Length: 205
Image (cartoon, rainbow, N blue to C red):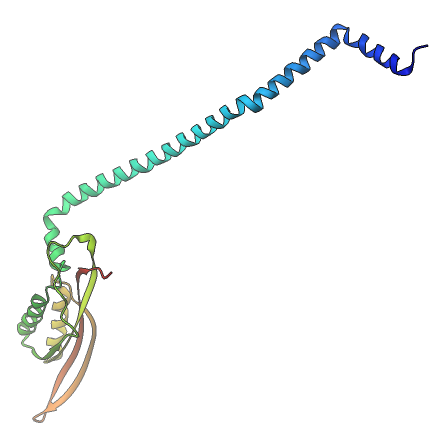
């Protein structure tokens, strides 16, 4: 009488001899082969394709940025050409050198036009003139202070300050302090004015 183990073996052998069992085994082997190739053969290809897609997207984004920059440069060049003939006005208002002597002469000229006497004029230090060959990229906005004391009528002093502010060379009025003194029995109005004179100077390292 066959044992239980022999019966199980016989039953399995009969099952695998059937067509359905053969098809199931072949299907299982086929699925296993597909999974094997997907993991060990197709996966590297998919990873490479993913990297290529990402690289293409990055290059598209870079291309868009470059296109925007080119458009901006084109707009800037057009704007520059439109104002090129008036750039000397900017140089006069905010020169690329302190132009210290010229600034002092402008102050003296405006004071003379208003018939104002400059009692004193002082600066903490005389700025170093920048060479005209210095590249603009090596310059930064700077200023030097001027302190002056003058006397005259209020309307004259007021007009003096307004003329300074309206002058093509840029002057910034920081403070105006009025005081009175008596000379020979007459009151005299004095004004102490501090100015900032902007210009482009060399960058400090």
